[in-house]
Amino acid sequence: MKSIYSLILLLFYVGTAAAAETRYVTDQLEITLRSGKSTRNEILRMLPSGSAVEVLETDADSGYTRVRANNTEGWVLTRYLMGTPAARAQLASMEQRVAKAEERLKQVQDQLQDVSKNKTEAEQERNRLNDQNTKLNRELAEIRRVSANSIQIHNENQTLKKRTADAERQIQFLQQENANLMDRSNRDWFVVGAIVVVTSMLLGIGLTRVRWRKKSNWGDL
Image (cartoon, rainbow, N blue to C red):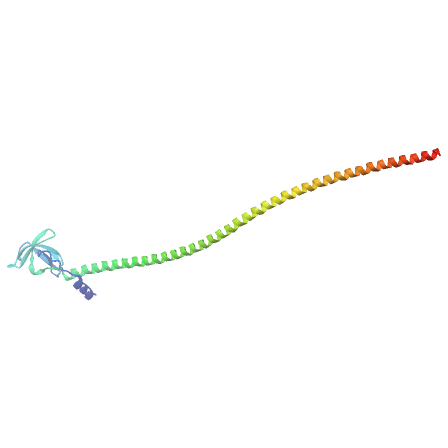
């Protein structure tokens, strides 16, 4: 694992020394920040490995450099300062960057998976809607066909009703005519009967008179 991180460090690391006034505490446990340029001076504080300090002054003769660390100024041995962060600090930083990159990669992969899932669901929904649209179009065509047939049947039914009404009126007219003819026939037969009766009576009277005259004539003889 360390070799991988070291390789990543070599590939991605770019020197970050700031204008030669920024240095880093060497890769040791701690160094002393003293009030002067010798080990006899007071220790102001201990600086952990990897701490960034601001260089204020360098004394090549004494081998000390005056620095500022967390608002505290003092002297440290120049040989304990480096132009780049300690390898351990760089490794920790790279580990954090790798962890963040892996987390971001995981998020991107999850998003890609969600997009693929949504795409599949969208395609399924589109296919379902297409099927439904096709079905509705067929139903609409059938409804239109049935409606056209219904309209035709309705029109034919109206025509038949009109014809039936006309036929019924014709039948009623014929029935009335027939009734009138029957009434006229009955009247004619009544008149004929009356004429026959009257004629019969007249004939009877005439015959009676003829017979009476004959008898009278015979009596006279």
